[in-house]
Picture (cartoon, rainbow, N blue to C red):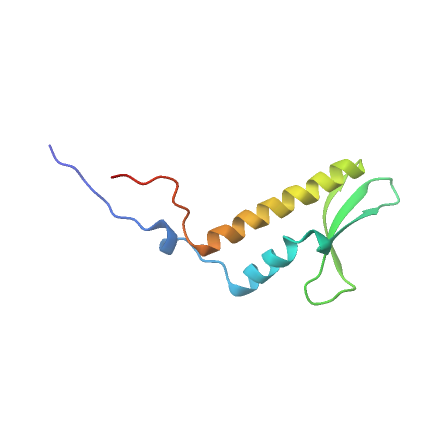
Length: 97
C-alpha cells in the first residue's frame, strides 16, 4: 500500500492582502465610519465614509427598515473584523499530541 503525502501551505500560497486593502478594512470595521440615509423611494441606504475624502460616501446596501440597515452595517463590520484577524496568520483551531 502506498500513501501519497502532499505538503501544502495554504497561508503562503493564498493571495495575501495588500497594505491598502488592510487599511480600508480597518477603516470599514469601525462603526463611526458608517451612516444610514433615506432615499427618495423610502428605502434606507447604508454607506461608509471614504478613507481619503471626508465628503465622499460609498453606498453598500439598501434596506426597508432602520433595524435592517443597522444589522447590515453590523454584519459588514463583523465580516471585515474577521478578515483583519486572518491577516495575522492562520488561526489554529486544534492541535494534536
